[in-house]
Length: 125
Image (cartoon, rainbow, N blue to C red; front, side, top):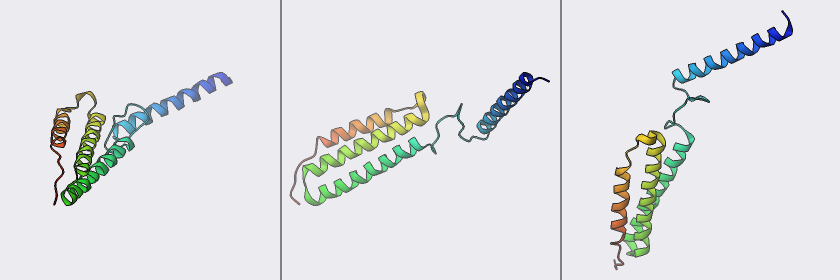
């Protein structure tokens, strides 16, 4: 055989092996370079989850400070953190479910937090 035919056979073999590997990884539910759907193990999802957890922690901390000191600043900060947490949860749901995501639950929660935030008042403990 001449060199051209040998190289064509080699290229075809490499492409065939690559396609088989991608198909195998997709069947095994492992992330691959192509044809993969987002999963909970993805770094973007983990980043959003960490931000959501930090926002929830800040909301609890600020609400505790509000109960302790009675300042409207802590109350508003607490509800702002809760709204931020709900937004991150909404982004996580959208990231995983895509177009099929039902975001009405998060929209309702955000509206409720905004209504409650308007009720913040200073008080003396």
